[in-house]
Length: 211
Image (cartoon, rainbow, N blue to C red; front, side, top):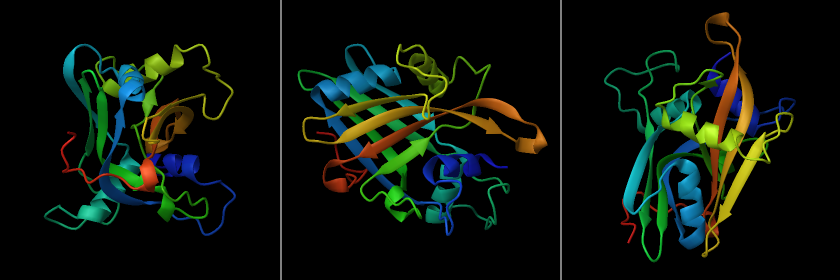
């Protein structure tokens, strides 16, 4: 069982028929003011001035991005063939009007079946083991989520933190418990998912300046 299938299970009910993994798309969501500062703190982007972090997306997203861009010299036929790693950038500017942007690869949940969510976009982490790498930025986000008092081991997701910007853009950071069966060995761990609902349900072009 691939991790892409695991993420699919987070997006689509297991019993659904005619299920379709969502397409990848490119763009960014921008939060401002208090929502930007609060979300940035959860992502580990704190302190004066500007800060950024690069978050590797999970294998399901990476394969969807490959299908979108097809940048390899040789065609790939599945995600076991060396799908290129993909990274999203979270950038925060602390000022009198704080700004947080996340770009640029997302799953367009409006293209998922049957649980279509038009205007919503997401990306998730690779599998986070129960003994995670402390230098990995996803691990640090995971540790912040699990340390919050509302974390509930038995809930699905175990935790959801949402931030609504002044212009109505919403960003949620969710923590899920999952199992990985790579090489037929079962491992228990976690996935962090970032879910975005931008204003008017449309991402901002990733090339646009944050100013």
